[in-house]
Amino acid sequence: MARELWKGNIAIAEAAVRAGLEAYFGYPITPQTELLEYLSMRMPELGRVFVQAESELGAINMVYGAACTGVRVMTSSSSPGISLMMEGLSYIAGTEVPVVLVDVMRGGPGLGNIAPAQGDYNQIVHGGGHGDYRPIVLAPSSIQEAIDLTMLAFDLAEAYRAIAVVLLDGSLGQMMEPAEMPPMRPLKTTYPDWAVRGAMGRERRVLSSIYLDPPLEEEANLRILRRWVQIEANEVRYKGYYLDDARFVVVGFGTAGRVALSAVRAARAEGIRVGLLRPITVSPFPTKVIRELADQAEGFLVVEMNTGQMLEDVLRAVEGRAPVEFFARVGGVMPLPDEVLDEIKRMATTPLTVDGHPRDRWLQRMLAHA
Amino acid sequence: MTLADLETLVYARPASLTEMPTHYCPGCTHGVAHRLIAEVIDEMNLRERTIGVASVGCSVFAYNYFDFDWVQAPHGRAPAMATGVKRVLPDRVVITYQGDGDMASIGMGEVVHAAARGENITVFFINNANYGMTGGQMAPTTLPGQKTTTSPRGRDVETQGYPVRAAELLATLEGASYVVRRSLHDPKNIRLAKKAIRLALETQVRGLGFSMVELLSICPTNWGMTPVQSLKWLEEHMIPYFPLGDYKVHPAVAEIKV
Image 1 (cartoon, each protein chain N blue to C red):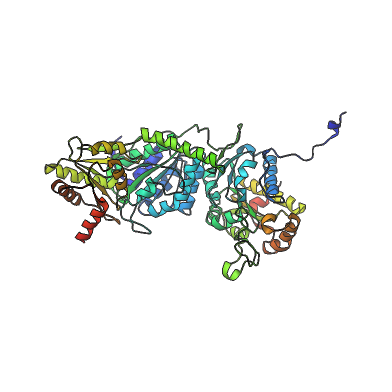
Image 2: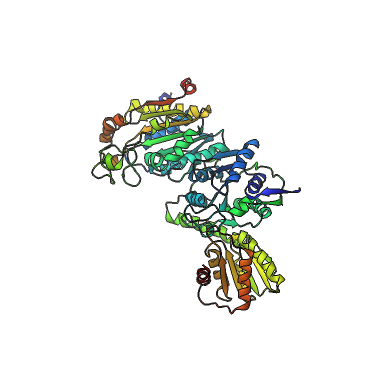
């Protein structure tokens, strides 16, 4: 199939359709609204389900109900709307039904703004909803990758009865790039043995997240955790660039990773041996490869569009065995390749330390510039 | 001829109810409501294609007592969850079973919009004028002056507002085709309630849109009365504020003969 020009939000919507999406429920919010608009046309023309819900609360619970029938379902939103969905996501996790969620992040907290940001990392990766669960989180940095990871999200959610999140920022949702759309996959014709579809000729089934007896809840928690251990063993994905001889390793996901790649290439052109590690799954996090890189690298630079949320996961992986520095633009301001390049040059020319916290040093530099 | 041949079975557990004894308090009308719904589902032969959506409240374990498929919704979200199930499986019968705190307080948005969309589901709304499961707090349906654990001096409408008449409210919506209020306080009204449950499910089976049956119910434990006193209190205090009647009957529903 030929490469065509696709806008991020619409590319994700069409990729979901081709992955076999049978029911979509959503609510308008910038910068993800095109996804909803596109599916309002596309789903009915294929005879599939589209409902514009009364709120994100409504949307996520419609998704919850549809997921219980065993079909492929999805919703999408942006940061404030995702906050409203946290209740439903916790119930979905507790009921162990597969769901795909797309979060096109914007500036926050609160109403914030509609510019690109990565401030939902902690909310998505480290929970957000109540109770003990971990979602699979995929972070594309291009439209092609957004398409491929959306397809993958449905497979992973189904394989592990888990929530799979496609986590991107508003710039990826809004921009257009040439990309190749995969062929349409057939819809499912068989359903899992837990699906609630009416007790025709079989014992009744109940799907619930309630285990009033604590030992049963403990069993459920451990069942979910065992599945997570499998996910950690099998599904870690990342992309490395120029890492073989790298003295310095930049770590960034999504758009921050893409900006950092431009900076890494510019630094290479100036003779600085620097590479990039771009986590594709930010959950499960590529801890092992970062730990291995910590033994060979002189230092790490974490680049994000938040005040250092993934930074904590990198620090946990590095375990103090190499210096870590941090650079970010926040609140909807995009980092520029030149800014990241300056950080790389600074690291290459000044002594680095493992003492103190990289976020504190970054804040002091930011305040000094202000 | 044996004695068994002379016996006529006049009363049995409906096939749509499981054998499990309920956890409801003595005298509670949830049991009556469960039985009526189960009887109607049996009579309409819907057991194998009904999917229930349980709510949060005393009826959180409704799925233990009905012998068909169930899912369990977050507090107030049953109509949204039912929407998800019904849209994927339009030929199944999808019901929600919700109390007054669940449907008329935290879940008001979900039920109003399900009705506005004309979602082809049936809501059974149990109104007992308080939050039963958490121990008798003020509900959106608590009557003016009624004492609860959070209105210890009686509901003061100046500071705590007025009770919500859910059937009247939902009846204003175009998408709602059958919205009625019945009561479970005596045999005559129980028979009328069963007929309403039948019409509500007929509305859904015929694809005529949203249906809701509000059932005035008692909560002897939290009201601090005997079951008999509670039934009398319902009749004397609840019915004047929540009049029984048909609030919305679409002409196509009115033609249904059962």
